[in-house]
Structures are given as C-alpha cells and as structure tokens.
Image 1 (cartoon, rainbow, N blue to C red):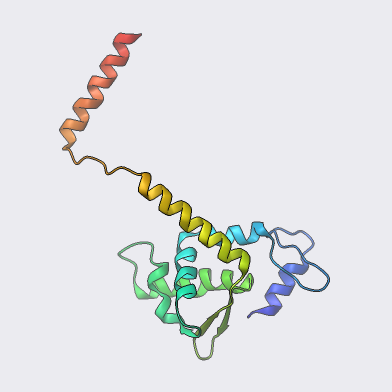
Image 2: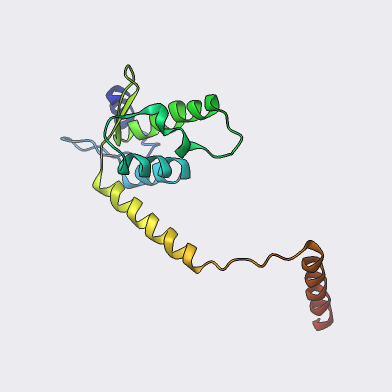
Length: 155
C-alpha cells in the first residue's frame, strides 16, 4: 500500500478528499468511500477482486475497467494503473506488489455493505425496467407528431 500518499492526504488540513483522521487509526470517510464507488469501472473492479483469489495478477484485471469496445490494451492498462488502482490503494482497499504485479484485496466492511446495497438496488431497477418495443423510426416519428398535434389542439 502507498502509505506515504495515504498519510500525506490524511494529514491535509483542507480535507478536500473527505478523509477523516483519528488519533489511533486513520480511516477514509464515507464521502471518500462513496467517491470510490461512484465510478462503474471501479465497482466492477472491486466485484472482480471480491470474488477472485487473493494475489491476482494486475493485468488480469483489464476487462473490468473497459468502458468502450474499442479500447486498446495500452489504454486499459493506463486507466487501471494510473486511475483505478491508485484510488483503491489510497483508500486502503488494495495492497499492490508492483514488482511482482500482484494485487491483494483488503476488504472493508463499509465498502462490502455499500457494494451489496448497490448490487441489490441495481437488480431491483433492472427487474422493473420494461423492454422497449422495437419499431421503425417512421413509426416513432409518426407517434411523436400525433402527440404534438394533440397537445396543440388541447391548448
């Protein structure tokens, strides 16, 4: 873990990242944890780490950070190494052996509860969504025109 960066940020009196410090043990604030979880790629990465074995190869984690189908391996590595992993390391959720390119997940009860809650809400919303009918563009345009005409008549 990059403890120097973690301590330096935690000691910052401006608290721009939402961290709170205590005298004995420094823990990230709930705001900082939520900031970590706001990114869908980081949530996918955490889910992969949660369900995988400890001491995974970092390059084996490229797919969870993929945002677009056309991203190259180089782009994925850059996102993983320079955006996603530093954020997870700063908050203490992972420990990284950069020499061996291994990542170790360090579970946090608060993150686990938040991830479970996000997963439950996502599942509920997905089940509520209705599939959209597949109609041609001309049908859709005709329906919009009729709706607009109806609104004009009702004025």
